[in-house]
Image (cartoon, rainbow, N blue to C red; front, side, top):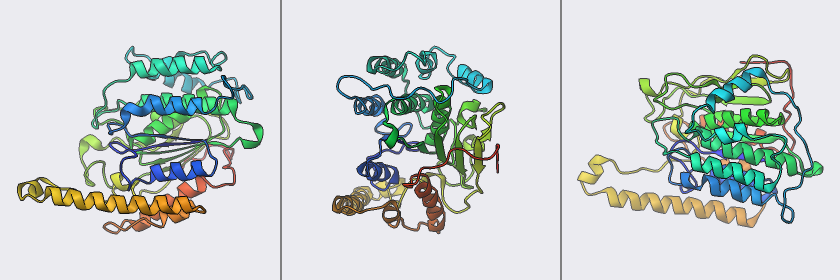
Length: 355
């Protein structure tokens, strides 16, 4: 199973965002894929629908098969406390998930009830706070648990998660909720994960893990505008929590110096009108040019996918340089390709190694 989570403000409507195309391509190759829109995007209202559709797709007949129990029964105490704290408030999208009985939640109806409770708790999202991270973690982890339970043995793959920006924080949260469910067969790639700007300190369930393998790629340039704003600086490295599983591995790679935070999930970028363009009456023309370029890119990728034989490397070959950032994009793309390669990703490794 593959879980892909867009960054803040991004979703599948933007053809330059590679997450949508990676999801479609991997699904065409037989993978189970869940793509979730970013916090405060145009598609955040679709979270329940996408998760429910994924769950429905796992049914055999009228019910979910039960082929597999949790990999482990225990939960590291540090993780237990972290998730308990994260789900403590009444207005909280993780509360129903953490409170659900792990042993009895195995029928389609049980999953559906918890998903509905998560949807009912969903709060308004803004690009300037952390609301929305828990919602994505809840839905994604429920889908991951259902996949683990239902997947035939010969088709079982590690659960692989990729998240950008606040989607990166949601990816780590998902990684941790899956461990809460006893699932350790998880590998995660985070692209400069960040928390809400209104939080001085992020709860550690978004930047600490207790199992599996995590590769984290941070950047130098800041969130939002590519420079340094104090209120956007909460981008902690990923760490290993006390009492973590012995084979937990975290690699914090070196900061990429050229690419902007917001461009990590894009093949290219298109000019959009600013205030001066509106004053001069050029906004409509710029928007039309952008729409035409997006359509051309969409048709090119979709056409190639329809022909068959397209690989991730073919998709990423379409990436374009913007202000010298192509090498950084290619670095990111190599990690994506490695995580999603046909050969299963090893989620066991040496004792905790944090770079």
